Amino acid sequence: QVRLAESGGGLVQAGGSLSLSCFAYGTILSIDSMAWYRQAPGKQRELVAEFLSDGTTNYAESVQGRFTISRDNKNTVDLQMNSLKPEDTAVYYCFANGLKTVLPRPFEVWGQGTLVTVSS
Image (cartoon, rainbow, N blue to C red; front, side, top):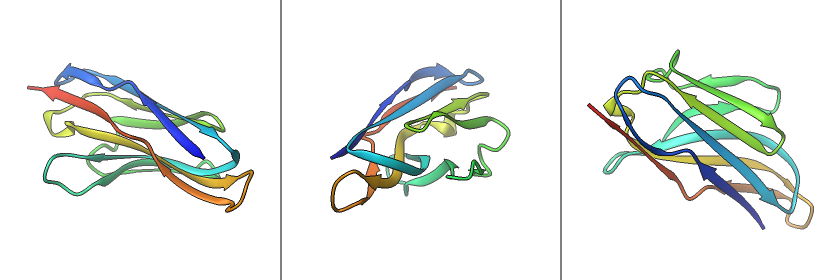
């Protein structure tokens, strides 16, 4: 089984910063891509940032220039969030896909989520 451990959520004032971290563990052979999504109550889950296997990164327009996604190693992805706004308030979820060491080989896994609250 593959699991994701998320950390770094919390309460900050508008204009502040937070850094999220996600660590993948379990029967992992390789990881293809990792990403951060977020979901506010009553809203659809949306892609915030993704880090692809070739090192390409993509960002939602709403966070472009404020957030930075990075891969510390093959099993860890971070999200540095600067100049936070109240509209960034949401539960942030880590996502990863890749291959396991056991069958079935492909996997897709979501973290349980970490809450980010930005006060005005």
